[in-house]
Length: 463
Ligand code: F6P
Image (tube, rainbow, N blue to C red; front, side, top):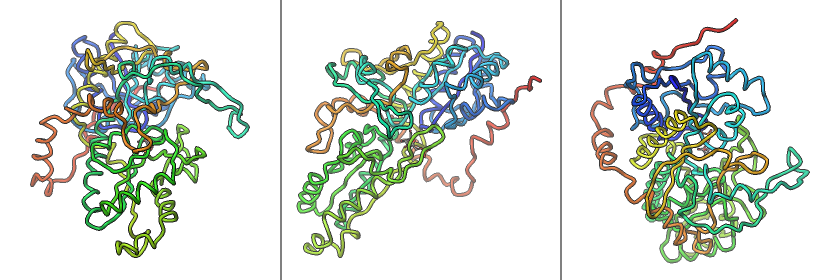
C-alpha cells in the first residue's frame, strides 16, 4: 500500500493525536503516505473531501503532537449508515479518487458498527478510542449471548437482551482491556473527587459527582483512586434504601459524604435517572444529562431537612447536598503516559494490519498476567452478535461490590495494571512548567486548528 487515510470519529479523547502519531511513525518506517481526513466521516460527505497530508516526504508534520489532547484532524459524530448503499459507494469512490488504498478509523463501538459495509468496498481497520472504555468484550464468547426479543415499545419492535452466561470471567481473557482515553478521563475525575472532598468536609456537605461513560461504569469505578465513599455504576440498578442507609451512616461518622455516579445510572425499574427527558445525538445515542441532579432530588426527599437540622449541620437537605459534573474536562487536555504510549502502539498496529492485508479488523490492547500489555489484531466480526450488531461493553458485575458500592477485589485487580504507573514523570513536570508560565498571561492561545487549516487540501470535484 502506498497511501492510507485516517480519520477520528465520534466524541474526542485526549489520546487521539497519540494514535495518529503512532500510525504516522509506522507509516514513515514503511514508506507509506497518510492523509488525515478532516472532521471524521463528515469529510467524506463533502464533495471536496478536505484532507491533510500528515507525512510529506515520510516525515510527520510538526503540528502532530502526541502529548496534545483532542485531534488535529477534527472529529464529528457523523457516521455512515449501513442501509444507505449509495452513500457508502460515494464514500468509497471519493477515497479511491484520493488514491487512498486503506482506511484507519479511530473510533468506538458506533464506528465499529459501520465498518463492515465500508470494508466491503475497501480495506478498513479500527484503532480504538473512547473514554467510556466500552469498546471490547469481557470474554471472547460474549457476543453470542445476545438474543432478540419482541418489544412493542421499541422503535423496531424488537430489543436486544443478554442471555445467561456460561463463561468464566478472567481478567486475562478480556478483549481490549482498556481503551485510549480512559486512563486520562479517570485521572481527571479522580483528581476532581479528591478536591471536592476537602470542601465537603469543611462545610459538612454531601457531594454527588457525576462522571461520563454513558451506560458503562468504568470511569466511575476508576474514580475509586480519588477515594469517594460511594460509587454508583449504571450496571447495577440503584437501591435507594440501601444508599440512604449508607449515606446516613457515613454522615453520622464523618460529617461529609462523597458519592460518585456514572451518568447512566438506572433505578430498580431500569429507567435512566439522567435521561428523564429523552434526547439523542446525531448518531442516535441517548444524551444523558442530570443523573446527579436526579439523585440529589431523591436524597433530599428521602433524608429530609430535619436530619440536617438535628445535628446543626445545615438548615435544609437542599443546602447540604450538592452536585458537580466533571463534564468535558475529563475528555480534554494532555493524555497521561499510559494513554499516550498504548494509543501510539494501537495506531501503529492499525497500519501493520492494513499493510499485512487484513481488512475489517481492530487493533486491540490485550493484557495477561504473564505478558503484561501488548497489542494484537482482532477480527471485527468477532465483536458482532448473530445479527451483525456490535454492543457497547458493560463493565462485568464481578468488578463491583454492590454492598460496599465500591470496586470489588477483582475490580481493584482490574484497575491496578492500568493505573499503577499511568502517570509519567514528564506529565507532572509538564504541569509544573507550563500552567503558571508567565507567557500564558500575555500571549493569546494559539489553536492547532489555525495551523492545520493552512495545510488542508481539497479534491477536484468529478463532473
Ligand atoms: O462517548 C463519550 C462521551 O464523552 C460520553 O461519556 C458522553 O455521554 C458523551 O460522549 C457526551 O457527548 P457530547 O460531547 O456530544 O456531549
